[in-house]
Amino acid sequence: MNFQENISLKKYNTFGIDVNAKRFISISSVYELQQLLKKEKKLFLLSGGSNMLLTKNIEQLVVHLNIKGISIDREDDNAVYLTVNAGENWHEFVLWAIEQGYGGIENLSLIPGKVGTCPIQNIGAYGVEVKDVITKVEAIEIETNKLVSFSNTECNFGYRNSIFKNEAKGKYIITSVCFKLSKSNHKLTTSYGAIEKELTDRQITNPTIKDISEAVIAIRQSKLPDPNEIGNSGSFFKNPVISISLFEELKNKYPTIPSYPVSETEIKVPAGWLIEQSGFKGKRYGDYGVHENQALVLVNYGNASGKDIFELAQKIQATIKETYKIDLEIEVNII
Image (cartoon, rainbow, N blue to C red; front, side):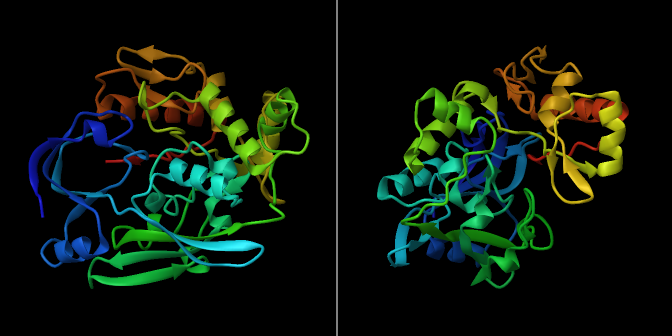
């Protein structure tokens, strides 16, 4: 095993925050991981680094999970069952699936990160959540070093949430994710967000899964900065779900406030709208700020610290709470 010392993590996190790992190792197989766990238990797990904001140097052993591989477990005329290892790039997996004619994840194109982290926060976009296609999550239990599996139900998926963010947090290392994707009669989701408009602009009336993926990529690229060019972690805040009574109160005061029904008692409000209306969109504070095209995205223009960006997030939260009586929840993990 190749242990390294005092390694910069700047290239391992999409915010491009320059903090150091006291000790670092890259792991490329489940066997290597289990061998490591025989000696080390206090680990800092690092995958694609796309859903974290690093605010300090890491004293624990940083383990970069780089386990690769995609296998077909079984298939029939309608569906294919896949096992995808945790270190596979999520977007590259989506593109691979589309090239094979497998549907179900095309709306999740261009989401940064690795496959192993997709169940943790139940990634979602444009009306689709990854829980809709996950059949099983395989992981190593850190305490026992045994390989275990969680069924879809056992994952306790919720909006940007799962068992891995709650009672199982810090207890397991996800090694692979199993998916059921469609091979025919694909269920297309085009009514959410700007997909229909994008397809219309492209003069596409009977879209394929590839058409939807390309539309989603175009929309995301028009709104979201490329982490290779501007450090960011995508959507920094969750869209808040509020009570009908609070929404009615806000609607009287702010007639143009957009909303999406969740249940008979709750409504989802776009966090980006709240942040933009509060005057933060496009605001720059030295080397960090809020992106000019998408108020949900906080950015590092060069050499900002994680603390700088976190303090900005807290300022936004306080303003939204004071103005709208809404608690804005951070989606990114603050380290």
